[in-house]
Length: 35
Image 1: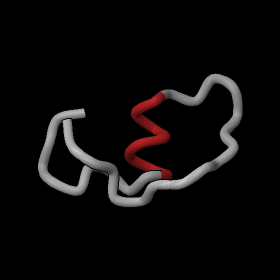
Image 2: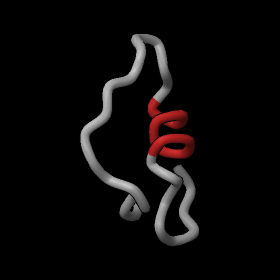
Image 3: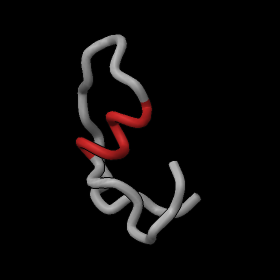
Image 4: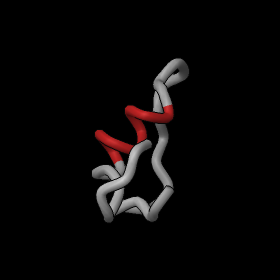
């Protein structure tokens, strides 16, 4: 597991997956890594 490209505090709707938060909002992992 690596660091996320875009960090910060965000509000997300209930029911969103951690994968969606990391990949769509956070921009994915900074290094090639399986999430």
